[in-house]
Amino acid sequence: MIRSVTVYCSSSGNAPQSYFEEATTLGRGLAERNIDLVFGGGHVGLMGRTADAVMQGGGTVKGIIPRFLEEREVAHNGITELHVVKTMHERKMLLTGWADAFVVLPGGFGTLDELMEVITWKHLGHHDKPIILLNVDGFWEQLLVFFERIAIDRMVKPGYEAYYDVCDSADEALELIDHYASLP
Image (tube, rainbow, N blue to C red; front, side):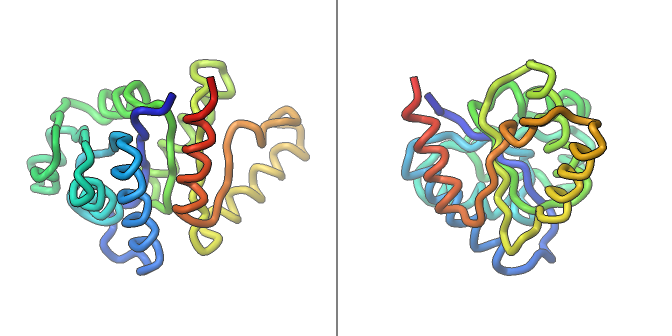
């Protein structure tokens, strides 16, 4: 059962409009399904857009933000719950622990760090939660090619592709969430 989804994504307000549109669609879809959004707690970029869409749809949003980012006034105070923690590591542990599944939209270094961590933890058997890469406009293509390269060079075992799903739209991501939610 999927009751909460952690979404990793960009905090940049300069991302292409198509990324914002998919973030909005994802947020609305989560709210329609009564699935809580767990996210990094910021009001900016794709993070803020996703959270706003969930809130506007009557859903629940739980944000987790380290104090140093809250103090820079990027905290989203218009959400259901905002948890302020001391460190990025605390934030990442809660983002992972509170999730029943992960959706990864386009993002920068922080998003890439979070993605690699949840894939690595799945690889190590730390969790078996769905990881969905939202490949808007082919955003993740080069990373997926790199994953193929490390498999060719035998740095990861065959079958690594089962660690995550790739979809091209928020609607496809929501269909995958529905699929995983229907599993026993």
